[in-house]
Length: 381
Image (cartoon, rainbow, N blue to C red; front, side, top):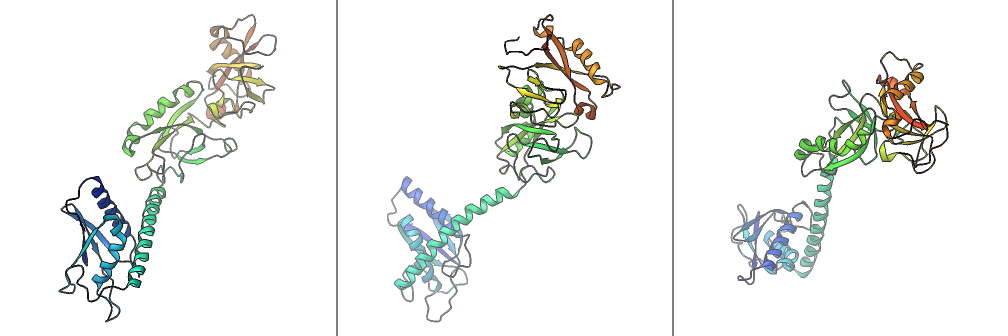
């Protein structure tokens, strides 16, 4: 083991320049410590600081030729090349425990190293420092990316993105515990349970756990208020996966009692056909071509109906009975006149879907349209 002290030629030098050179020497020595066993690079074991100057702890190269330079000659030749331009100082090598006696200071070599040896060591150490720095950065990034962002229980290897539609596998009762999530790239084919609609950032994993769910409630409150049967759910990163998750909690809106069957809020495109009434929200403008095909359209253009709100039918109402029962319930519970529509011009309407009957909620979408069956032009209340 050998210790190398870096000494400034001008002991009175002070200020930011000196500090910067010392810091750079220390950083490069630490990066070089990541490269071990290279035949042309002296291995750096540690960097210590004494009286404001760094000492480099190195493993000497093993002597292979009885006539070759002692280990200290190799160390003394290599380090000035690597660190001299950065520190602009002298280097003193001190023999460590168990090493050859009588070898104490720079210049006390058996013979000076050749120019060829110096050049070879310079190239080797320069390469070692460069590769060591790259290895250090890549290893650090690899460590950040190996952890599952939300833990193994959630089942996602990659962080969630805005608009991702998810399937939630609840091990117990829906509402309770942590569901195992997977993605539905189509946001329709697999009857998704919900969608990522927002994110909340945090300064630490602890902050995300403490405040992520509450902040997600706030971020999704407006959207949830426009839908019939949904809830907020926060996917919080774990401590190990905090960096991989982008240092943020994913805010999902899930169906409260069953799937939502399609995209929500701004992720629905105009002209798209609703997969189910579950994704319809208040003040949506609808192109109702038939009972089975309803499209979302801009409210500034022509449309047949506007969603006003929701109501629920009794548990005993069958799907076959739902149509007539829904019309009566909407006229009673969500009358258009309460929203400024003239009863002599407009009438109440209702839409039902398979989803609310599968989930048992029996939720009904209540709409308003013209009495004469004509289109609405976007200038209504």
